[in-house]
Length: 273
Image (tube, rainbow, N blue to C red; front, side, top):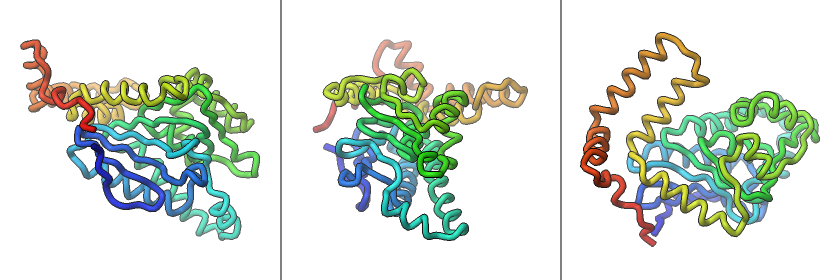
């Protein structure tokens, strides 16, 4: 049985005893649209996930029909009345959310159904992996209303590449789940009625992996970046493999492999509910 964590107004943070968190966007009545409160609560929730050493990974989802429809209309009306400095403060808060999600210590999986527009698409791009339904809809619609997706743009470029980002940022075209998979934004797509089963498959896959290695692997990828070779990067990678080989989980994993038995972290994989 999953247990709720701290109480939020726009989110639900569920902690599974097997060692992962599910963070739900919980404003289904507004299609999980962003407002200032949701952004602040997402930052707090991500801090809680980062501070919990028992977590192996985190899943980001949206309640209701849509993952996230982007910015809340009421919030946008307020922003239209704000001066430059106040808008800059709002942008910095949104940037803190996106950068904190991208740099979360544990791996992240976004699960997308319905719309993922604007900042919602940004959240998907910030996650390490994402799956979704074939009929999910994605859009960088900001240019339609005289804006640009400035804060999320670096993460979108990393996720789908510069050329595709130019197309979808400048045209505001919608694209579906199949196209998102072809672009690399989604790792996998499925029919809507198959999504729950595919989420369970990904959970089982991740639960089979060493918690320490998952965190170390994500840190390694941050250092490797685009993979540009340098003497400093070579030394970092050499030290990284040596450190994890002599770690407790590295030793356990090697012994389990050689003894043809499950490692201790693979023994708690059944859904407790």
